[in-house]
Every structure is written in C-alpha cells, then in structure tokens.
Image (cartoon, rainbow, N blue to C red):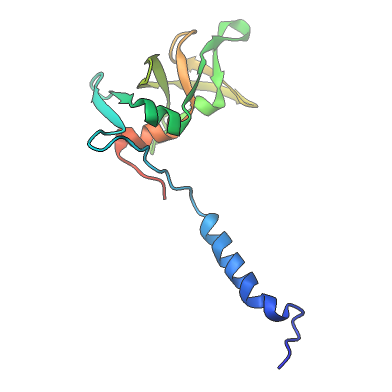
Length: 150
C-alpha cells in the first residue's frame, strides 16, 4: 500500500529524527569534570560563614573552559562587569565567583544597579580589578551546592 503523505519510506526516519531532537532540546546536563582516579575535580573549604572556597584541578579548569574578566569602573565610577559573570540563586539573589588565585574561586554577593546589553552596573560588589568568572560560573555554583543540570 502506497502512502499518500508524500513522505513514503521517510516517515519512520523523520519520527526518529524528531524524537532525537526532542531529547536534545531539554535542559543541558552539566557533566562533572573528570579527575584522575581517586582525586575529586574540586575541593571545598569554608571561606566565611556562608561562603566556600572552591579549588579545581587543572583538568577541571580546562574542561569547564573557565574564563575570567576584571570588574571595572565605568561611567561615573560605578562598578561594571560582563553579564556572563552574574549567577542567580534559588531566591533570586545575585552572586559572582571571584578568582583570587589560580584554580581558586569564592562566591561573592553583588547588588545589581542595572543591566545594559551584556554589561552589569553594580550598586555593590567586589572592587575594581577583581577577577570574576564569566564562563563556568554556573558549574561552580553547581559544584558548591551539589546541584546537577536537568
């Protein structure tokens, strides 16, 4: 029996392609960075009452492609940073991950004044010259709080 759909023998293939694409369109899965056997990709120690210091292995930094930028003083002396550095917690509070030493990251609270294009003007936050994570911040947040992508 001949199909009148115009797809003929292609229908099963189209269904498979559609099903596969639906699986890929969901939330991204955050893969943990591989570390040598017996070694964690990140270690965590207290850096304050509610803050932790995360130290990643060289391999974890490489796999996460962690990138940083400096907080700068913009027009009128306001602190500015790239939007990619901003992380929101479950309560909507805004944070950044500072990078005080190689492979070391500490979460810091920020108060956003305004967001224009890809720049964030801060009411408060780390001082100008501080390195903040612009790529990999969400993965650091997940490592700190033990959350995984869905």
